[in-house]
Amino acid sequence: MNNWKIKLSIFINYFLFAILLNSVGTVILQVQNTYGITESSAAILEAFKDLSIAFVSFLVASYITRIGYKNSMLLALLIVTVACLGMPLVNQFWMTKLLFAAVGASFALIKVSVYATIGLVVKDKSEHISLMNFIESFFMIGIMSSYFIFGAFIDDTNPQSDTWVHVYYLLAGLAVLAFLLLFTTPVDESSIQKSNDEKSMGGFSEMFQLIIVPVVLVFVASAFIYVLIEQSIMSWLPTFNSKVLHLPSTLSIQMASILAASTAIGRFLAGVVLKKVKWLTVLISCIVLAGALVLLALPLAQNLGSEPITGWGNAPLVAFIFPMIGLVIAPIYPAINSVILSSLPTRQHGVMSGLIVIFSALGGTTGSLITGYIFEHYGGQSAFYFSLIPMALLIICLMFFNKLSVKGN
Image 1: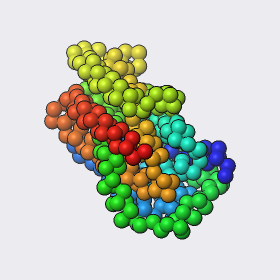
Image 2: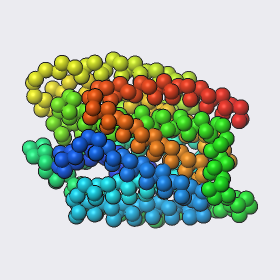
Image 3: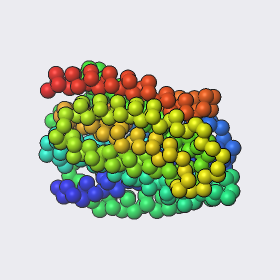
Image 4: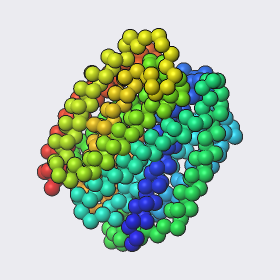
């Protein structure tokens, strides 16, 4: 099997979906301006994205090996191509909901397939955790790119303008290219198909049997809490920049790219560090540093002065410092995913990947809805201070997760 070509295909697909999925923060800001939507109403876009991810993951995770990893990814790319073309043609808020539902459903197919495919192309646990971090870092590069791609289509002189929806023509074109690349990439799934023939998968029952295993139960709690933290910050950072720091819309979106860039760097470095340092030590240190950064950076958002902000040169210091939280929370998600996946037989990776996607999606929706509510009623600073609570809970979960994973081995 030509592993380098498979890895390249995974990277390209993840890059595209990073742009589509994590444009939700940008779109949340833009639908408020273009369609006159409130903060709490705009927050529902996260639910359309994440609940469709969870629903489709639940349906397909136990049967993904029968559908085929490659076939699942091709179907996902076809769906998002159609959805992206529909966005500028319809240009209504309801279409935005439908778009994110389609993107979420497609990403469920992509992520379950990608996570399961990794097990086919790596040799051992250390290579697994390293590749997982590199793939997730490339995902963050896609997120970072999305801020500038969307920013190029936004008209700051007319905040109510709908020119930003034209970006979806470009994204539809990228989806077509990704489809063609994957279509021409051979993926040998014979070992998984053979395993299924020898030991038939139990459908939904195997998923339920897996989730009641203590180590898996603590893992899904950890994944849920982590994504709650990440998405509550990522989805609302453009709105925070605009409404709290008073940056222009385009600059608000572009400066949110600092979070994606710092997260990409953090995951890239983690791919190296986690080969040498125990994962629990790294992750606990990262969470403590993240909490310290919240307490140090957010007070800088007060008393900013009345001078108009026109660009990166006179943006407030907090707009640069707070997004650096991505650097320290970056290693958490891919590391815990790798620990749980590498502890299971390869034939169970599809089912476990489905559970990862489901609970990650539920965590993202919960985080965004809570943050949107706090943002609207108590302000942007209070919304981000809220992240300290799940950070404390995550430390506790990781300690239990480590004990149970050690016992399992």
